[in-house]
Image 1: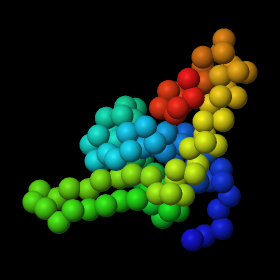
Image 2: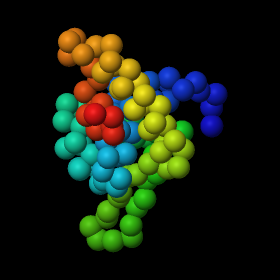
Image 3: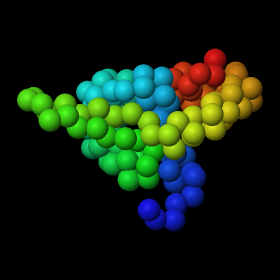
Image 4: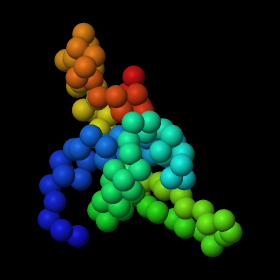
Length: 113
């Protein structure tokens, strides 16, 4: 694994959203993840998943079936990131209550309400 800082792993717009969606849903196929993410393009989702898998945050499990089935879930390392993202969402909720443009949309997928 390359030398990455934390913000490179989950600080981007899409990586943190993917982590929060998988934290809520636990296991999703690509189509389910795509549906949950709404505004993401296939190219960006595929690239983000590849990056998260390479960094050990997301696990990709493929089944030897016809048609092929692939599922995505958080690794233990990925699950350990969720409380950090929840704290960021909690902070955003406290300091940006009236400023809905700055509240991260993926916070709805985290446990912080």
